Length: 136
Image 1 (spheres, rainbow, N blue to C red):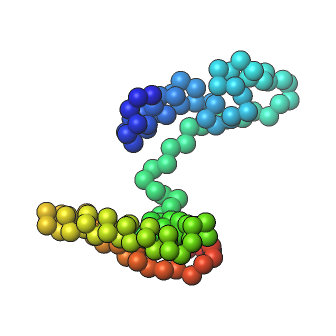
Image 2: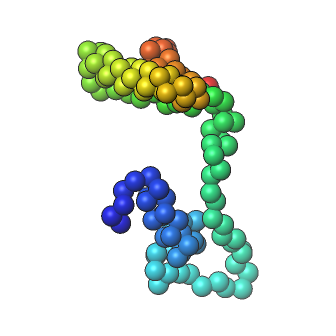
C-alpha cells in the first residue's frame, strides 16, 4: 500500500474486504481461509455481512452536532493526565491557533460552511469541560 491518503486507505481496505469479506466479520478464521471450520449437521448457520458506516449515523444519534467537541474534551483530559497542565496549555493553544487560522482563511474566501465548521472547532478547543466521562 503506497497511497496513505484517506482515499487511498479507504480504497485499500475496501479492496481487501471485497477479496475476503468473511474475514472482516469473523476474524477467528485465517485470512486465507485455510483453517476455516466446516459446518456439521446441527451447527447454527451464521450469516456474514459487510457493514459500512454511512456518514456518522451512530455518532449523530449519540452526540448530535458535538462529536468533535466530545472527542477533543476526552483527548484533553487524557493529555493532561499524562503530560501535565503546562504541556496541555501549549497543546490547546496550538490547536486554537491552527483552527483560528483556518476559520479566517475560509471567511476571507466567503466560504460560510467551512468557516462555521472551524468556528465549532475553535469553540471546542477553548471550552474546558469537567473531568469525567458520561453520556453526551
